[in-house]
Image (cartoon, rainbow, N blue to C red; front, side):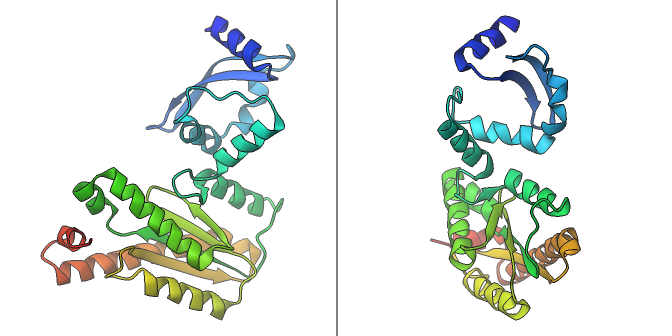
Length: 246
């Protein structure tokens, strides 16, 4: 292993090279070995910065690459982009969202008040995957992101999970915020090709971000439950709704 890391260090000519074992299922990781240009530096010095969100996001970043070598500022910019953007949809990813929240909470980069938070969850993804395969499911996720961009393209859109999105709208009037959400609901209702369960909250206090996110999340799940109740009432099975879609 030491020979491998030494070869990586020579090839990349970087300040540091580290091989990390990641257990994505249990969200655990551990450095196996490391090599630094400066013999004084130690991996222990950098562990506080290697948070679970950061390390676990790398698997997504590197999944389509045999290796990733950074030789220039341009390469670093590309890595920064890949680390913060969801490659399927082009919106920001969960790692970026968590960093944004942390920066607001520690006041290093505040979200401008008043602000609104939206949670949107895609209805019917499992049924789409079961019927037409995961390529069709990916297309549905992409379409959902495009609808969100249509209504909130100038705001911060994050893909926080497989079929979940979070939107942060800064410096927004409460009534206008509500109107924009209603516009989104009108395009993503029960019979729409892209159907979303939506929850939201608004606040004029910067301390309320986590509270707003919790309220929006709860409202989204309530909306999703209403969707399933309505779906089961109109059809004998939920699957039949989505099997009828083109």
